[in-house]
Image (tube, rainbow, N blue to C red):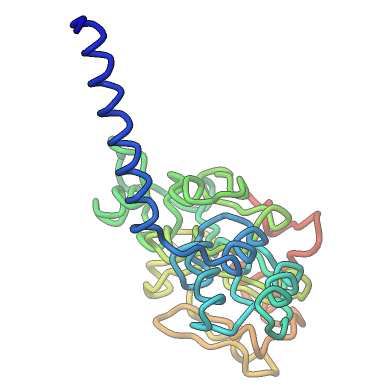
Length: 277
């Protein structure tokens, strides 16, 4: 037999055998497709942010399909509209998701906060924090190197005068920035309700805080005395607002001698406190 023809026959035979083996393996090793989970996954926004508490959108869809959770309101980026869609697919009751947006609780910009060192290194908040708490005098404030920007899938965060600021209209409350901030300075606030917020996390005594930042909370207790709803407490020399009790009356803001408290209503496009630099 012609050697060339023999080689062609051998190669063809090997190809046929391999194809049959792959076909058999694909049948034997096939993973059953969860059609319900796939339909739910199609309705989810695809941010894979983990705000739902599962391993991304695929994990949440699978959990709903298998009955591991019956809560359809865990997807903050999707909101109430997505909740209704996935509830219809999963055969569950739909819930309402109150719109929220993230806020950076710090006013330690380049005008208010001084610096104690000239940082030369990787422009990362996480890395800079390990060196004496960062380059700024206040070790509790925003470093402004933008780790939260890298984490945000919606381009909602920008650095303004050395401090991160979040556009409430672009924010989808996915919590990615909250998980990333090494100082724990980012919190969620209601989008359509006015709430008082302490834009500071400094835990030093008042005299030291004043040296570190012009807008830092000094723990003077005036806000606590001014609040009629027991919504403000001072812990570790820094005020903290209970958003469930706060009605946004603004009396704590008026009483604060250093301007560390502001009443924030994120639903308004022209928001002075978000754009303050």
